[in-house]
Image (cartoon, rainbow, N blue to C red; front, side, top):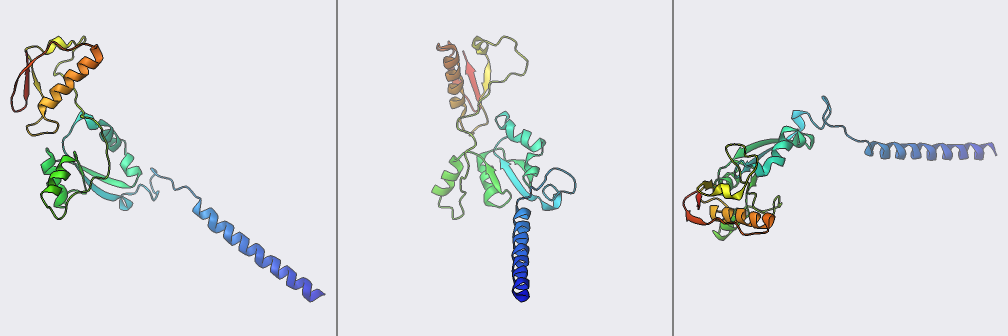
Length: 201
């Protein structure tokens, strides 16, 4: 009888030990890793992954990304980001294909041109960050009460030569915004398209 009782206690002890070991192993997988403090494993420079991002142009349109860089959001996610401006999709694509950049931040047209050109190592588009052209009508001087009539007789820089969208598309986009916001057609006519300047009459 005593032998059976000892055997039962041993079985219960082993079962309890196994349950405790299982519970401990599950608990270690549920712990939350802290980031952003000195000494934490998520934010030390040694554990960050270096990524070079080549952007097609430095633009106010990409302000959210610049804020994320300045506020350290990339580092919080384990990325040591180096931002380089390519000044053109062709240059950004070249940087990508020659391994000078890990990611190219540009329009999809460069990928299409590269693919059509039978390049063996073409780029892969994996994210859409914007849906429409990011055009901003800005002025050198502050204007308190802007009116579209103020553009008469002025030259509007539409972007760099060969840029996407082209300056005529940029101007038509501005006209479209005017029509949408004011519910009337602008009394503005474009009379010449030069390399980068849209002149308005």
